[in-house]
Length: 98
Image (cartoon, rainbow, N blue to C red; front, side, top):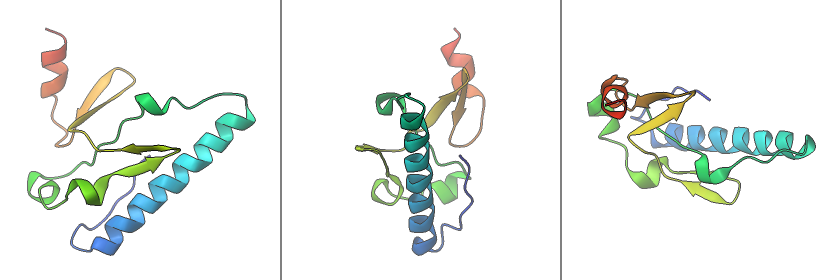
């Protein structure tokens, strides 16, 4: 999922959190309907952006509820074997393949 926001407006950050929560709830319903299960323990979250913009966000601002789990953002997430860090560099990919 990708959502764009202006972090100068806390209401906008809250709106993005709500949209991510709603999208995750839709995904969980989709899985249940098809007798699948979303593994919340493997669900990862990252906010991407310039270091100066990311620094203005706090953990309280950026955690998202997915099902019954509260997901705190990490510095990097894995998607299809590719590690994406919050600043979109490739450094984590190089260190994990050592």
